Length: 140
Image 1: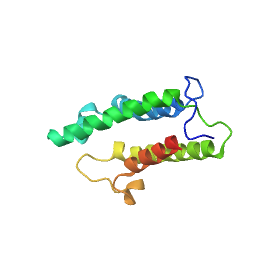
Image 2: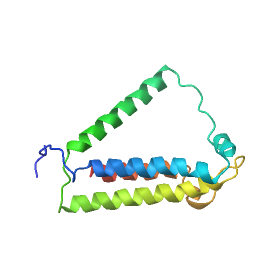
Image 3: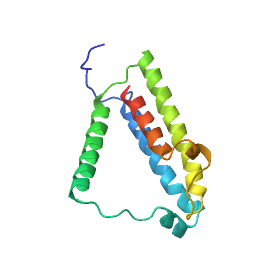
Image 4: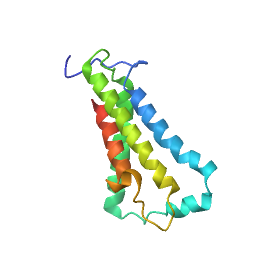
């Protein structure tokens, strides 16, 4: 295994993880619209305050990095048959499960109360932890 892999567009490349990440994080954002009161959902997810100049730069930089990583993943082949692949898949799935478990109390909690049940008893931001674990899995 070399430090610089052979880049080629293929079906079994790491873009599979990035596409799965997009699917599992975009679809859950849309399905509650059909189940719950839309006005209550928008109250719960109140508009963010406007970004200052530094925050805009950081946000735009993060978006550019994510797009570059997604394009890079199209050309990066999966290390099929190696223990690292299975470790990465396991971490990705664990992170996905954390995000899904954290999303249930968040979607069903009253708007005027903090979320203190479920996984939120242990962490104030379990979805961030789940996404971080998923990125570690994608990186492995």
